[in-house]
Structure formats: structure tokens, C-alpha cells
Length: 155
Image 1 (cartoon, rainbow, N blue to C red):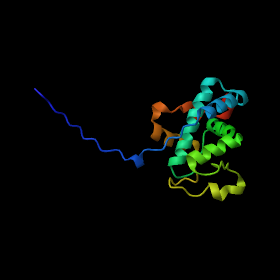
Image 2 (cartoon, rainbow, N blue to C red):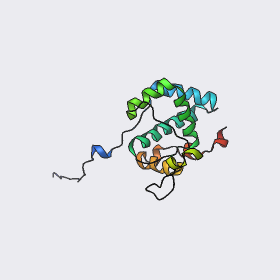
Image 3 (spheres, rainbow, N blue to C red):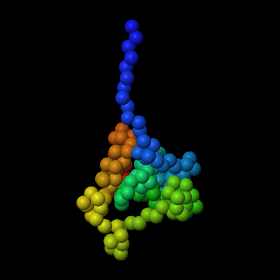
Image 4 (cartoon, rainbow, N blue to C red):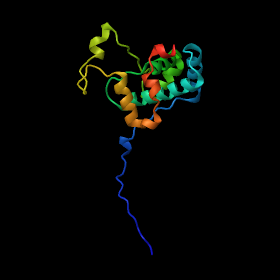
């Protein structure tokens, strides 16, 4: 006896799939070394932080709004920026601009950073960013510790 089973699957629109950002091997090696040496992270923590930096860049690439990185992701981003030639190439490749700017909050740019956003809050915080990352990658593929650890815990 032959049984046919049909499963109705809605086609996935390619436009709905996020463009995932992947750092090059040289960027990963550079950032791993910097995070271990200057942030005193072990190899495991450095690699997890770099993965979450990639996740953060993916959010910036695919979602409108102002997103705040976690303390650990921000450290990795700062080290990435310090290698200006590498970071400029990365920015052009993934974002189509000379440099993906990092604009920290300070009193002089309050109007730029604290505009009313679609979520009704004055600004996103790292928890909003974490939840967005989880919605894209799934909770099993996100390192919660990298998002919730505060600087004092690893310094």
C-alpha cells in the first residue's frame, strides 16, 4: 500500500531572511588576541563574545532602530574599531559605507540618540538588543552570559 503525505509549507521569502554578518578568520584571530590580552578573557569567553558581536552586527544590518550592545560586545566592537584598516574594509563589505559608526551616548548627542522609538521607550537598551538577537538566531544559538555580564564581573 502506498501512502502519500503532503505537508503544506509556506515558501520562505528570501527578503525575510536576515543577512547574517560573519567576521573573517583574520578578524576573529585579531579580536580573540585583543580580548584575551586587553580584556583578560579566556579563549572560550573571547570566542563567545566575538560570536555575539557578529549577532549584534547582524541586528544593525537588518533592523531599523538604535541598538545598544552588551558590555562585553561593546568591548569587542571597540577593539574591532581600533584596527582602522580592517574595520573600514569590514564596514564597506557588510554595510556599504566607509565606516560603521559607533556613537556612544553623552549629553552632547542626547537628541540624536534619545529620539522616541517605535517601542515607546526613549531608547533601546542591551536587553532589547538581546531579545532581538534571540528572535533572529534562536535562544539555543545565543550566549546569554555575554549579554548579561556586566563589566565588573570580568574585569
